[in-house]
Image (cartoon, rainbow, N blue to C red; front, side, top):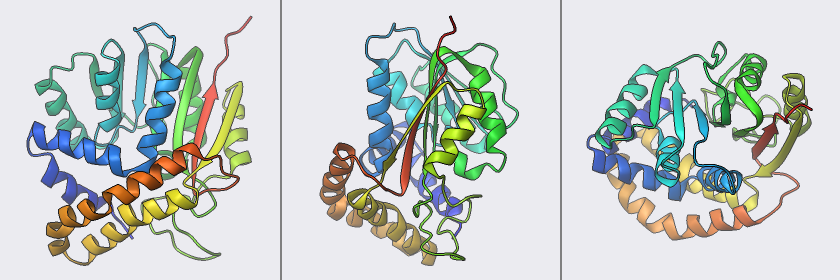
Length: 272
């Protein structure tokens, strides 16, 4: 199933005005489990650091993580890049209206991206599963990161992260070029790219998997069947929101031996 067109229709409804875009961001923050994990990791990384951090939002999409960071850490300098010029233009208009002078936006192919100034933090949220030449991206991330900096990745795992259940089954998400990463494999790829220390943990355990089905799979399938279902989405999400928030909270607190998502942290340690 290709759900980028469905996502684009949904975003078109919610991004017509700055107010609606903020509502859209809030909905994403509440409903999407990966947003809970990423925001917690960013907060933990920021503790005790100076306020003038330089951050790359690699594959910014709708720009919700750049929006979170510029509100939470207003002195951070953020470069948000994406390959989609239409999404970037929408983000640019929004951030300009909000007066976010610390956020810059640029169209870029991550397989060819090079940094003018090294970053203290690079985040890449549900991006790598869309890129065939991931090793080139990992090398570019490493060369673009300052010594002592961290790369933070959220991506599906090979335990069914694209809703693949068996050999030969098609991914639920047609835009993915791989069905998910193996824990050991992505750690080795990052070390080969030049990272000194890599930690990988599972997300989307049993509770998170149910939340994903309720917040993503069911709504996307319904929206793909008929646009009329878009009119019912506010009522649907109003009903499931308390349940999904509880499920997301449980997933955030648990340590899983398996899960359909991965949270990856890779560090470039100082030399000498």
